[in-house]
Length: 198
Image: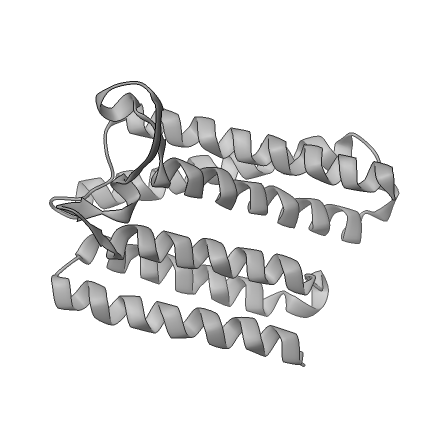
């Protein structure tokens, strides 16, 4: 398989921060996020095997890599007596687990917005007749929301198998799903707007 220069750059950047955070997590005994590192390595391998079929644009590859970095930093960067994931960016409302807007929620919206963009790219690449249709927008949005739900299942498995996780409870899961959906919808609306003005 031929890997393009721009793809090597994203790969090198991604593997550098994955390696750095893996060492950091082990040094702190943060085994919950080792599970996430393994999941991320699986995602990297999956993306790598489909590079030539997908022909992801460089901007999309960088967006995916930055999502991974935001995720690793969320669990690894200390903020006060907690981690970046629990940092309240701006208190827009709510109490306890219903507080909005946390770093975690922003990463969920961004990440599954990028996921919707990726699914849109794959749809119009492999089914070019759908480009410009509502199908090419709604399927990626719903697909991103489904992958967001899969992410919550992975978090649930972490809760069941690893003691003292920082995943959160029922309200946290609900808010994660809401922000996943918001990110996906904003992404496909942005795609539709960009395509309309071209």
